[in-house]
Image 1: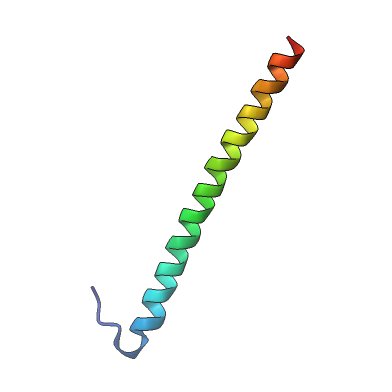
Image 2 (image 1 turned 90 degrees about the vertical axis):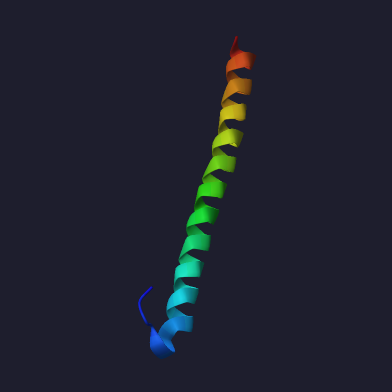
Length: 48
């Protein structure tokens, strides 16, 4: 790991925040995908 000096806290917290946001986006996408899939299956079942 490179020496970050006095900016280490800022750089590492930025990396951590970015990683957390990416994980959050993936989680929200997966939950939304399951929800939409369930609604679509319900509509297809309803129409026959």
